[in-house]
Length: 206
Image (spheres, rainbow, N blue to C red):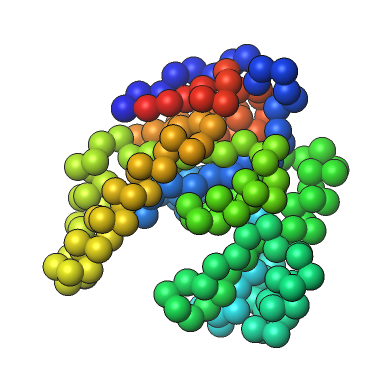
């Protein structure tokens, strides 16, 4: 898979300032987002709300917004979440709508790094956003990342690989695909979409 360059405007539309990044398990979404956070302070990264407890080193409002189950449910019922999900049947995660909208209203680029299901929910809530799929260089490399740790059972590896196949098949739902063959380069491609117009809504296809 190869990416094409990005330079001109979306047909008949102003380039959206909100970019939603998603992709298959183990493709490196968090790593790319962390690179953007460190090297591009002009880009605002959304902070998810969660009902799980903070882990050592995590700071409220920086890594996550740590809320009670009651607070989360209130946000959900009042329509204050762009997307939400229950992860592993336990903790709830969601993207607060207010901070995203306030950032966009201020004219600042905003990035959401979420999973596939979350991206689909955001498309329903904010279809004007630009949806970016982060893809692995090859299937074999994704397999290596998924199973290379050797911590899962054979059944767990099988399930993760099957999930990855489904997630990869969803790439066509996205406006742009960026191949994560180099974190710095992938991050720069992503930032360029936040601050410059893309070729088209299919501008960086594999």
